[in-house]
Length: 303
Ligand SMILES: Nc1nc2c(ncn2[C@@H]2O[C@H](COP(=O)(O)OP(=O)(O)OP(=O)(O)O)[C@@H](O)[C@H]2O)c(=O)[nH]1
Ligand SMILES: [Mg+2]
Image (tube, rainbow, N blue to C red; front, side, top):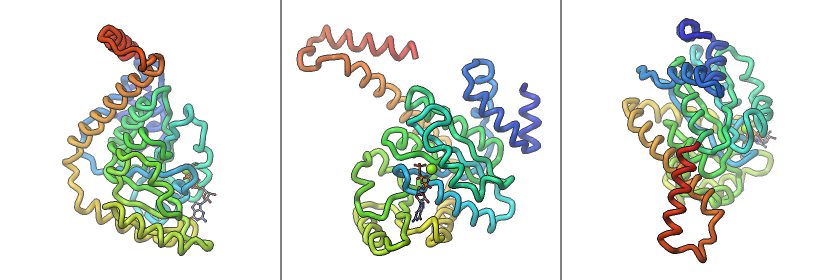
């Protein structure tokens, strides 16, 4: 596939060409990667709404996306939607991705929906780097909405938070449980917290969780059930209201913020890797520090 094919495919909204372009982006063949990444660097005026959906494993992220997007497709007859699913704990297609597709069965067959697992590299920031480029390719392709589903595990989540316009966190209907384990870097990204599974006897607990979250943090909180549909329309309304006021010209500064975060986590991951091989109780001399920095430098240059 060459540049002409991709240009033509994007113009004709050919999903199979989009799919192949993302595969090229994930390829270890340099020329493939370079051609595909051209489309992630295009600076076109685009209005895709980019939304992160995160939360602990099993919180109901995929089920929520399924019921919310189903409603969105019904109400807006011309919307096109991309869903990227990331599982940082697994290589390319393992983990919960099979579960994600199954849970999104009702929308997966729509020709207005594109679902794509985002591949992971060996490095956490690497995962996010590919995901960022995939988002940009989807943006250039021209989707109205791009959703990024990510399992809530600290650092990668915070990186995803910095690359989206709106960040939704799903939580279980038990107050405090999920947020306690969450890093501060993640909390600052949350725009909307959804207490899911407010059904089958959990209604009271979910309401207590809602007021707990509302009082402790500054973001909006809704109780929902992705199974019964409770609160789904309200969720869509909240998201759409946000985008009515959203300044898309902020994108550039958002990209800079994401890149800062990416560099930081890239370096800090390398630092912790080397730190493990040092006995910090004994090595405190300048000489040791220099060796440490030299090893860090070598590691950064090599990767
Ligand atoms: N009772 C109830 N169960 C739900 C609801 N939403 C999801 N579930 C169930 O929770 C389980 C996990 O749902 P998923 O949508 O796969 O959750 P997830 O957060 O995408 O999971 P991972 O991608 O594996 O992290 C499934 O058995 C769902 O049927 C809900 O609103 N109410
Ligand atoms: Mg899922």
